[in-house]
Image (tube, rainbow over all chains, first blue to last red; front, top):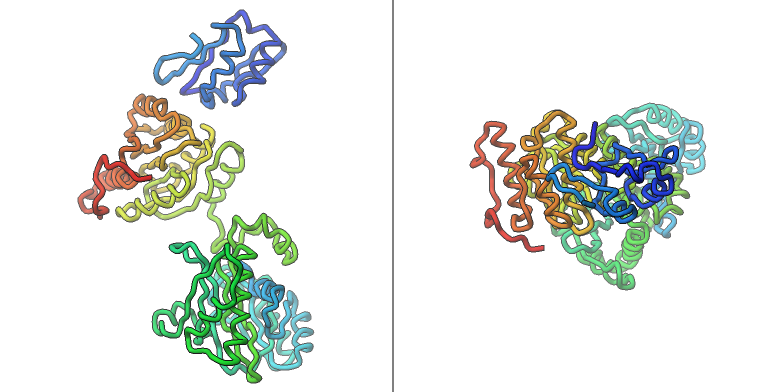
Length: 78
Length: 423
């Protein structure tokens, strides 16, 4: 089933950045990100585990990662 | 965890408590050989972790080794209350002058172990306590201070035992107390503790229960007894529901969703927090609710762990609603648990607002949790509502759904909505 509570948006500018993909995979405590073929992959099955720690937002260039809370319409990283 | 009688005897022997001559056998041949070594009348006892052995034919007397072997063959094939015997105990049938009871139990109210002694052994101590309270001596002792034999002596003397008998019984009860602490027991009893015709005392039957959480500390003893890690040794075998609960807890290292225990009621419980589970379970029962289960969540379980536990509880036949309640939490995220329980409802095709009778988890990230609950229309409350009041609301909702009048349900005195809980 798709994520109910959290969605993550990754800007095109870092999607194909292999180093950034590895960095996001490393910092996320609940394995939402993975590096796949040099690109940033989002593991949908882990999205709802997001603990809103903002480590991904801080690891990426400003504005390139947003964490959207589907239950109240707000987002982190805007 | 419970021990078989033959294991309890080995523990007594380890601590120097005298025993009647005996041996453990798993075949009729072994039983015959042991009876031959005892060279006298023997008792053959089935080794099962259930009561009612005598009534079921699991205890028989033999005068010869051949008779002992024949009885052992019958008993080894005899199922008692759904339990097949681990083996048989071949015990010398001693000439007993008098039977006593010696035990150590844990007093949960005083939070201290307690010596219990009676000069009326061989029958249930509960019966003695009810019919002959003057024949029971009791006394607490410390688990911290050095062990003092005089405390055991006071308890034995309380039932009128004096002289050499007092001097002989005191070290037996004292050692029972020492092993109780040393081996993390919750119960250690010798019944009967027999006085033989020559005036000496021997343990003729023994029963011991160890705290489950003590098992890792007691691996040396358990290895010596041959108790495998896979043996639960609980009062009953876990149900399928409980096994699934254990699997959910084991599948994800994050947080705890443990001690899932099945009951017959219709109110599912997702409860936890350092004693909060017991308090909440008791509150539901005291208010006339019928819990479908007990469990302990805490330590910040993941969304998927909370979700899977909730799904398990909701899938139990007869469960109308669930109550999600904890004390005040600091190391569990309210919003994460809220996500888990809501997700479980939705994925099972239920409306969370209908299925969750009450959500009462105050603490870390509660504002975020409350936003989620509002989004899905779930009734929630914060710490200004006591655990008892939350339990009452859940019980009333289930009663209303059942068509029963909530007013018929018993209420705890002095508890009103909005009461600030003392923590």
